Image (tube, rainbow, N blue to C red; front, side):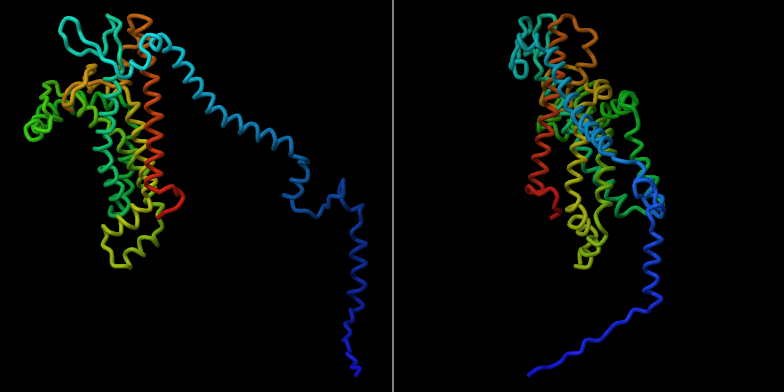
Length: 369
């Protein structure tokens, strides 16, 4: 059975059919610019076409960025080379014993670590003092910094938020020598008269506060001044990270019936913990390398004591005190090796910090659990 299917016809109006040839005739190559570039392009398009081939410029920019990245490795390599070159004499005399060996004084029979006259050098008290003062400063500064950040982000009235944040960040701009002078004239007398006797009376049984140092100097004074110096760094970074947490996260936790503290703990701090750890790492780096303020209040005694109220020293402070007055080449080489030890301690602390970040995030730092 044959069925005919009729297809409808579409007719183009004569005026439109005549217009197309006219348009094609208008597009004459003579009306275009050199190289067939149409004058009807936008100004941006004409500018890009006029620039020509930018492959050479892109290649130059690429290699410039590569050199900038490689310069970081070059700077670190130069630092390591100079430290190794300057400490070769001490390394040849002491080897690894420089970091754990102790000596006995022939006259008093007491343990000695640093004796430039007799050529006996050991970095043990300096490494000990640096680590004790830095971690004690973190123990003081971290809760206070996180508390300041929580208050400014979640509880502070809007009118007071900007002034308090400005004053907190202003602490980071004060030079370390000013902190040292304030500590010598205000903090140390306060510790000597009021704080240290109370610590000795109530916590002396632990052995950590058993030495009633009459000068007021020591690890506690150094830790307090370091805590004040690293507080704005940790607080500012914590506040920025907490601000970046979406408000929907807070609202979701509150909608489930949580209190304000539960909302802050589960909805804000839990999602901001990676940034908080990063701020603590930066604060620890500042505490490890601080020189002048610590030198003025730590006591500068190359000894190891269990009591936190006793005098001590640090790697940065011994470099500031003795490098310009080194009595021999071996003395100077030992000081440079202490600088190398400070460099190594910094690397180890950063490695442990990365391990801590991995432990907190369970190997997934880009995910917020």
